[in-house]
Image (cartoon, rainbow over all chains, first blue to last red; front, side, top):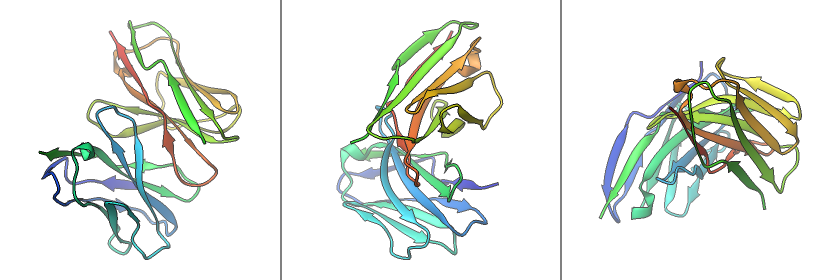
Length: 113
Length: 111
């Protein structure tokens, strides 16, 4: 079975600092996509960033970037210059081509003023 | 642009009552549609997905059913709710590619 693990149930970071959220996944597939979704207190799921497994270059979206290590099956999210609005649950998700998403259990991030 | 709607936003229902949650997508055609359930403080559990009208796949056998009567409409139903059906229900859509976009969700409390 394909699984996604987020080993940090909760994290906190001071405003303006940098934080890294961990994600590992288990699959025998070679072609897939990886995502980070954010779920703020409103509970609206928001796509933060995506990575295509065939691309070696790490994806970046403004203050959000990933460290994708395909051999290690690791996909961490780095948030730079953390803002209060970044407080949310963050879900790592894995999507093999033509199959359904597999979500991790989530990491609750609190940005402290 | 595409938008996804869910209603109702909040629902409180007694045990044994029926359920109907609706999801509609605008601005696209022939999307893949998904129903997820999220227990409090937990991850997402895929319940049903649909690749077309009348085509429903169930991921978890349970007290719920889904239907897709129109291309952009996805309905989650139950004939008799259980306490364990309480949770946050999310609908998502996907173009024929790889991203999923989520609706605002429905918070269901079964009393």
